[in-house]
Amino acid sequence: MSDLEPRLRERFTAYRVDVTTRAVGPGPDQARRTLRRRRQTRAVAVAATAVVLVLAPVVANAAMKGDRTPPVPAVSVEPTAPATPDATPTPASTPSGPASPTGSATQAPDGQISRAQLLAARVDLPTWPQTVPSTCTTSNVRLATDASKAIVPLLTDLPVDHADLDGDGTQETVAVVACRYGEALAKQVVAFDRDDDGRIVPLGRVVRTTDGVEDILGVTLTAAGSVDVRVADLQPCCETPTYWPQEQTRTYRFKGGRFVQTGGPTKFGKDPRLTDLRLSMTHELVNVTGGRELTIVFTVTNAGSVDAAQIQFRGLDVGAPTTGDWSRCDPAAAAADDHRTCLVPGVPAGESRRYTFVQRVPSSSGPDATTRYFFVTHYDAQDRQWRDRNEKDNKVQLPGVF
View (spheres, helix red, strand yellow):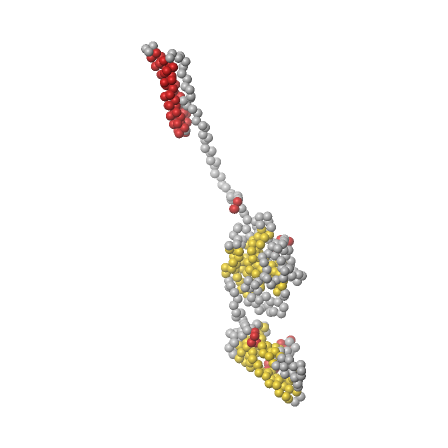
């Protein structure tokens, strides 16, 4: 054993120096790597120590057996750890423009549609009132421009306007379409948009006739996306005066996928320009030289709150006028109506007036005698005729006496 001890100590010393050099590593570069990979290094150090402890008996045993081959570790005491890629450097920040819209943030199609484009396209329309004929279609419609040619959907002469109605950042289009039925037009205010393929599609109906209105007179869009619609309670046609309708402006907005009224009146009340005339009558028929004389006395009561500046009697042409209030009749009005009517000064609100008309009639009734009817009508100081709040009591009848 004495001959082996010097050589054994020499080999242990050489082995210890070699292991220490490999485990610690030379210089500051190894230290920086160790700091950068501290977790892996600690694990490796533990493993290396275990290897040394395992190998030491093996080497010692070989030395005692006279093996002169320098000991070589079975594994490196500094195993190469998996390379960890350096963090990707953050590029210098640069000013960015508006974010490119993607997904749900994609810019909506622009729904600004011209009048010419509406007329050139085929469009779908909201439903019409049930009163319109079947030719007033709603699917794949080519809008017409002349209502007198056919009973088909048409684009009215009211202006086509644009605004952002649904809050998507682009504009939509509002137009008034109509379809004739009888002497009147069914009308509806329709908002149009474009789909993702650029096709014109209805966004929704704002309002239509029969939705508490009888006529649509105009549409104005606001910058806030509201639709102001001027509506009326009557659609003039035939001989209806154009000044009869009551007008209102009602405001609508697109909410919850449809248009709802958000401002203005919701219904029409009684027309404050109208009054309530009530007509009653007495008559007397007597024989006179050369025939008979008919005397009619009308009593007109103004039960309303509006003064009737003038009133007109109609149906008086039953004989030849003689005396009474014939002299008070407006001659121009009588001549214009072939003397079948009489326009006379009227009745203030809450008061009554009597009017007497005497005329010569045939001497006998004959087998063809018929019942005659007389009417009273309200006129204002500008000679404009007005409706009555209750027209049923504006009429009286004369039995068939001639």
